[in-house]
Length: 403
Image (cartoon, rainbow, N blue to C red):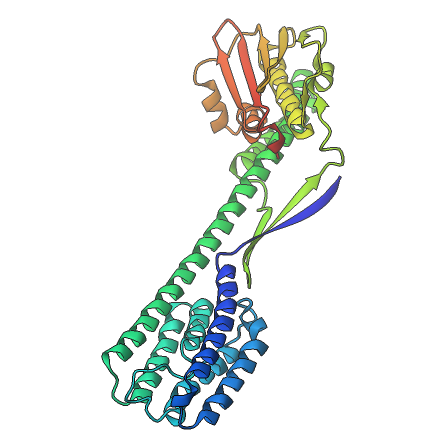
């Protein structure tokens, strides 16, 4: 089996950078068209032509700078805002009537792109500083600002701060989501390892303890040590066993979650559940199955068979070696149902909750945990003196999503 790392990028911020790139190009073209259609009113058109040429070259040359947060450096933001402020202050030089007529400045609405870059990069505080500088430049350029001037300045100021605040909230949400995925993956991995440990190591330790106590002598001491290790291991299993298997990072394009997965080469080939359950049958275990193959995706089939094995282990441990068990497999169009029943003494009321409190997670993890990951359910019915029945249901629509 080969390990595969799948990288999931989550970013609400990245579409804003793409939108800003388009905005800068479109507003550049708009500023050039404004000058082209109104050039007769400019007393010094060469000033406007020179500035617009610089603005166009700067805009096109710096498009990669507004592609993401990493490329958009503080130095670039400072120079970009300077270009916008210079264009505003040069407007009266190119158009002597600019201070008496409420006309557009040389960069026009291109200036808002510089302010928005501050907002997306640094949040609402950066946006507030940049928009305030633009407001001062507009007031200086007008000399005697009108109501329309104040209206436009206020609009840019409020819009940029609002966008900056939204960006900050989006970044916080991405970090929260990445952390939640990290915790979920850690929990799932801990449950998986706990099931495997319960099905192997803990069973062996419990058997060594029982056999050692029965044999006596040095074997009894070995059994006592095995019992102590079993208790310690159960405590680890119940309280947390593994470090998170997901790593969340803050990168330029948003929160990144790396998931390390294990791929099976034949995961796409359905497996006959009957083949996996056949070894469970024996002198005291009766297997009843359909005549046709019961096909499930390999992960689902293996987990379901392991849950059946855990149920039979519980029968052997708690009902005794002489207990009789029956396995019934039902293949329905929308789900697969496997029922494990025994003729043991049953489970006393409250015993399962007590076992979980003691760290004995056989039913909670090895059975219910497996079925929960498959999108199925595990129902346990036990009547003292009348045996125990465990019904395992796996919906076919969700069976392929296990682990």
